[in-house]
Length: 192
Ligand SMILES: NC(=O)c1ccc[n+]([C@@H]2O[C@H](COP(=O)([O-])OP(=O)(O)OC[C@H]3O[C@@H](n4cnc5c(N)ncnc54)[C@H](O)[C@@H]3O)[C@@H](O)[C@H]2O)c1
Image 1 (spheres, rainbow, N blue to C red):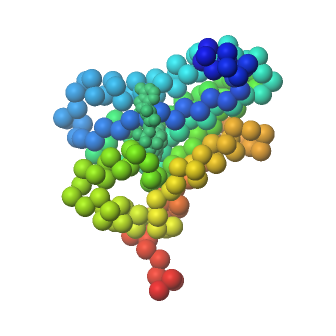
Image 2 (cartoon, rainbow, N blue to C red):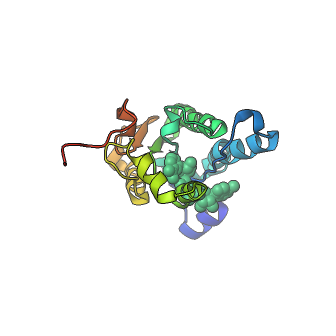
């Protein structure tokens, strides 16, 4: 925080994007696995707010955007700590929005769906045929593709400026329609 303020002369926008995932069954987790994931995904936001606050309060308007996930809204198999942490990201977003609106801070969440990043690739590479696994996964997505990082970034940008004036304590889901679908396979037959 201090080096950012020294470099830019102030702090108006905080984006909490850092996150890790741990794949496994809850009964196999160690206490350290749990604490490490919660430490990065949830406590990291607490620390960011705590140390940004003295700088943010100097502005008339400031912005915090937390990166949640579709698993802020629904469960996901074999990632119990991750889904719990992402539920907490949304709750914490709401708490911060309520408690800090008085200093001009708006706090919102962006909830990405399947997004083509190193995290996704690392996960896919644990399967025998990563490309085929991705093809199968995106059949659950009405847009039939993974999201691109810049599509997530543009929603973060929207929530980090006055284009989104009035939006506070909520989540924008950027998932290609994933959460809108009850079906497991949403492959579109109109194009055939
Ligand atoms: N890729 C997806 O499909 C997807 C879906 C939903 C949500 N997300 C969320 O998007 C965010 C970004 O994930 P990504 O897909 O780009 O993953 P990624 O692994 O490609 O990037 C994660 C980033 O977090 C940083 N990071 C991890 N631990 C850190 C720590 N202790 N301190 C500081 N930085 C740390 C890493 O250096 C890395 O730059 C995460 O919060 C993730 O949960 C990703």
